[in-house]
Structure formats: structure tokens, C-alpha cells
Image (tube, rainbow, N blue to C red; front, side, top):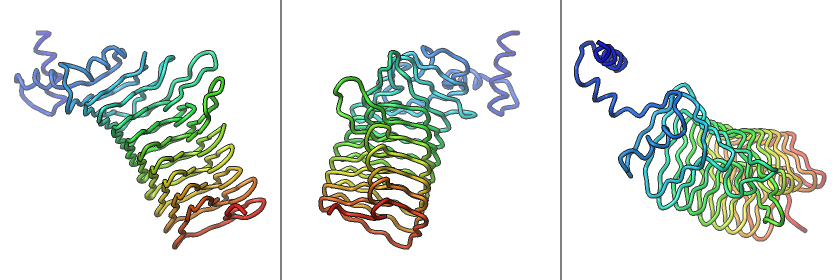
Length: 322
């Protein structure tokens, strides 16, 4: 009787009106996590040593006990009712290597805070090396690291749509660790980050550059129909900092109340390129120069069919070094 009752519940959830062994099959194929432990969640990602096409459904918050490393795999994790993947006390949520693809949908990601005043170095929530991260309807919040408060990319791709990045921070590390920043994403070695219909707000590079993005080594940042609100860099580039022939493209996007010492929205150097079209930029602030943008070392900018309102700098709203 207990077995029959169990099968009935599974079949009814799938929409069937009759009892059959299909209910058993659905149960075996499903990888739902509902109040299960981190160990159970981890096991479902690596069940039967599958490398391709693993899909895990998450129905409740999962507290990570350690970082999950994925190498050469394609994994999708889908959330129901926006559960959170919560960083543990040791390190970030995921390490991706060797052409891994990680697809996250309908989830929240919250980073770890290490004990004793220590901080993660590369990516507070995710670190990707030669891999791809796809986010759809995902909230990334409260992540922190010295480089890439939320995400670190090396020869990798981040594609975010209908997602929110808020209250992420780039922080100072211990000792003499180089401080570079990028409160949401740090891009190196020809990486690319794309934001579509997404919101990026209240992110802070507390130590140096890039209130949202730090792009180096011919990396690319693109924003389509997205908003950047109240992002701050302690030094340069309230939204984006570019070097090494990197680029920043924004189309049909809004920038409101972003700030830095140099370049309230963007700081570009080293033959980098900035393009802002069909967008609105307002209330940006630079304590020194470049209320909207600061250009140096053969960097260039194009601003077309856009509105600029109430932007302010103590010297010039758009500037080049003298």
C-alpha cells in the first residue's frame, strides 16, 4: 500500500491520471533537491560519473560545505521558486576548468565570507578557466574577492540574461597581494562578459578599479538593455575599467549615479575602445576627472544617440590626460 501511494504522488505531479511504472521512471530520472544536504546536492551533479548533459533541479536553499570543481562537463542547475546556493566558510561556490559549461536558471548565488578577515582571491562566487557560464534569471549577491567580487574569467565567457548583480564587492587582500578589482567580474586573457536585460546595482570596488567590470588582455564587456545603478570604484571606472585593447559596448542601457575618482562610468587605457549607443547616462560623478569617461594611452570612445544628464566632475565630464 505504501508503494502504491508513493507512485500515485509521483504520477499526479507529472500530470498523469493513471498508475504506471512511468511514475517510477520519472522518480529515477528526476534530480530534485528539496531540503537535502550539500552532500546529496553534490552527488546528484556527479551521479553515475556523467560528463555531459547533467540536469539538477533545486527546490530549496543549499548551503555549500566546500567548493564544487567541474572539469570538462556540461551541467545545468534549475531553481524552482528562486532557491539560493549559499557559499560556505571555506571558498567560492564553483571552479570551472577544461571547457566546462555551467548553466544556471532561476537561482540565487550568495558568496562566502572567510573567517579571520581573509578573502577569496579570484572570484567570490565563480571562477572559470577556459569555460562558459550561462545565467538566466539569476540573482548574484553579496559575493566578495580581491579580483572579481562575483566572477573571475580567464579565457572564458559569462552570458547573463534577465539577471541581477547586487552588493558584490572587490576587496583588499592580505599582505601584498596585487589589488586590481572588478566588483562583479574580472576578465583576463580574451574573456567576454555579456549582460542582457539585467540589472547591476550597488556593487563596489572598495580598493581600486571597476565598480562592475575590470577587463584586461583584449577582453570584452557588453550590455544590452541593461541598467547600471549606484556602482562605485574607489579609484577608476565606476562601472568598467579597461586595459590592453579591451572593449566596452553598451546599447539601449541606462547608467544612473555611478562614481569613481577618474571616470564615473568608464576608464579606458591601453588602446581600449568604448561604445555607448541609444543609452542614458545620468548623475555620474568623478571626484577628479571624467564624470562619464576618462580616456588615455590611445584609447577611444564613441557616443551615439544617447542622453547625458547631470553628470559631474571636478575638472571635466569627459577627459583625456593632459
